[in-house]
Each structure stands twice: as structure tokens, then as C-alpha cells.
Length: 245
Image (cartoon, rainbow, N blue to C red; front, side, top):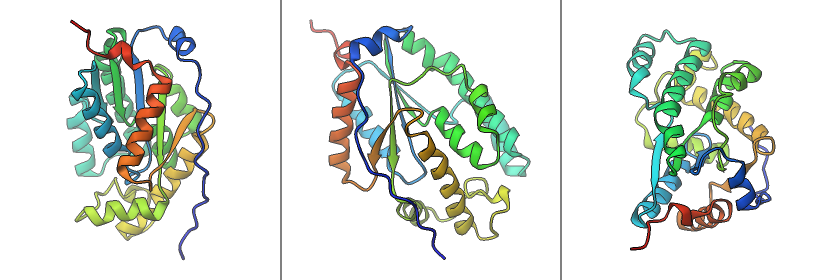
């Protein structure tokens, strides 16, 4: 029996004054984050935004979830041997994030860069909580993370997002499908249930973490145009533009 996912109306969030928001930051840079379940379209939209900014000569840096070389080998071994418990998995991702935050994100924010993050701490808050980790513990674990200037939350209906992933992958990976949770013996069904749990946790953060809700079913070019517009309203892009000679 298919699960009906509650609809969320896509409405713009109030945009704070850029000068006031910038004055509160302890650095001259700005942090832009995209979040959403697998198949929501977030990575495509951030890539398009990144290319647009690169072509314009803006000072930017791109970072993505679970990409630090410091813990990559440990994570890979744990996955291959299926040794990772929810807490161990969460701590590995936290170590990965801490390394990138200390070596990339914070130095570049202090250096006046526009940092683009494909997934941020909210991925842990949603995914690790779906695995049974305490939300309060997770918040404490990542309490050192700088607050984004804007977090785009790309939301697509569960079935749409899941079908996008399943159609493009020959086989879902063990942990990706949430098989470690013992939800279902069928990987596709386990993946769907796991993503539904993650989606529920994301939806709970929309207001508390000031997400900018983006409809993941809208045409790619139209959504990208809206993303650029909202970014320009929240962040003063001129400060990251190339200096005129």
C-alpha cells in the first residue's frame, strides 16, 4: 500500500535585510547550502548556480557532503564490511564535516568567499535521526558549524524523488538503501521507506532552521532562475564579484 506524503505549500520565507544579516556574521564571506532527499534536484540546481557564478568571475568555493580525504578510507572500509552502526556512521560523517569546516569552509568564509555546500549539517539532522540517533545529540555534535546565510530546501514528492534515483541506478548500495536498519529485505522498498523517514525530518526543520522551500517538480530552468533571484535578495553578490579594472 502506497504511503501518501503530505503536501507542503511552497511559499517564500521572509528575507532579512542583507546589511543587517551581514553585520551579524564574524566573517566577510557567505554560506549557501542546498538540502533535500535523494532525487530532489538539489545537486543539479547547485551545479547550475555554481557554473553561473564561475562564468561571472565570482569568488566561490564548492564543497560537498562526505568528501574529506581524511576519513574517506575508514568510511569505505566500514561500508564494505558492513560494520557501521548508526552512531559510528554519524560520527564518521561528523569527523568528515569537521575536517572540511576547519580546512575549507571557515578559512574561505573569513577570506571573503561565497561558499556553496551540497548538503550541510541538516543532512545529518535528517538522515542520522532517521537511523535512530538522538536529534538533540546531533545538534550538539554539530554545534560548531557556522549558520548558512541561506539554505535552499528542494522538496519533491517522495515517489517522484525515489523514481528518479531508482531509474538512474543499476543497484542501490547497502547503506544508501537503509538496509542496515532492517526495514525490508527488498532494497528498493527499504530505500523508499528510509527516504520517507528522512523527508519527515527535513519537513520538521523548514521553519525552525529557516529553509527556503523550493518545489523540486518545477522545470529546471525556471527553478534555477528563482534560485538566483532568491540568492540575490539574501546575499549581496556584488561583494564577491570580480573587481573592475
